[in-house]
Image (cartoon, rainbow, N blue to C red; front, side):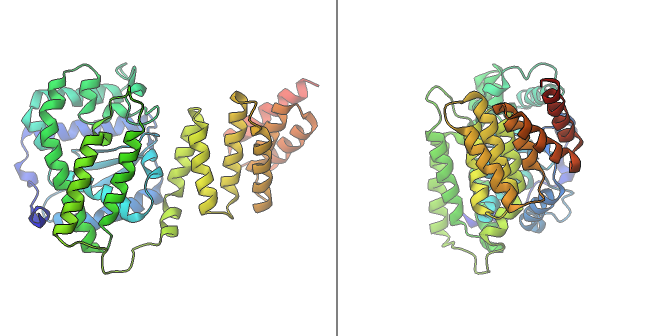
Length: 402
């Protein structure tokens, strides 16, 4: 089994004209996704993720002409996507199920393996026309030509807007033939096993705990079991495939006598939480935007526990309750929102955002004078032009309705 970790990737000079076109099409998809704002850009997080990937990839990249970059999709679903141009996309929602850097390294390791071994080019070469049709679908979707209709119904994750990019499930979902999915499934499983093995070996080599891969997959297994019965799970969350991968991981770890690396943990649990907090925050904001307030509340509640002295998360918890109270008036959410805003101000007396939240909350409850006071406090020092305009608009409405 360990020999799988020693396989050399296909050299770049072996790429034919169609391979190059496939890679160029993938780059076009990435460009269009960024243009549409589907990629959450944060230089610090991207640098952190890229450094992690380089720990895996560096020994395999001599004379290969390969570069890997990691991007975060502004999507609440749980999935990863690797494209043949060397880009790993990981959804913001995925970070909500990762508990430590070891688990993150396992996921990144599997995707790095797909790039190093050129798995997408291999699958694409098996059925060139159907794979080309998938890429055409992706490009059309990214360019907004109308094929995105119904994409949010693809059950990658709750209301996942980018689920059409999951490969190869999108072909079946879009009515382009079940033969595509069936013909690739066997190959995909084999390649996933190899990618899992690569990740295990690399994790052990650089000091991470391979056993965390099993813990993470078991968590995904639990999520897959809780999907609605009418939902056909995507490949990544297919309970049968997850079960096979868990058994394979356990067997491989035992056979190769892998254990936690002998080196000290690369980062502590708290350090890891700090590095990905901005991504979890983005995920919570996405959930609020989509009206998934229970999910947002869970995210911000966890962040409050992880960072009890940070006023930002109490404020965001208050925002969740305030927005939730518009649709759920019987659950005392307005009172909870008030308490969270007040907590945020105690933690950060100079932190202005809670004043905006309080102003909007008081406006909702009809406390006109209190609303005006809080909005004026916010406007005086507001740095965000968008939020300041929002506060000024609310203040104008209050003054016009004496």
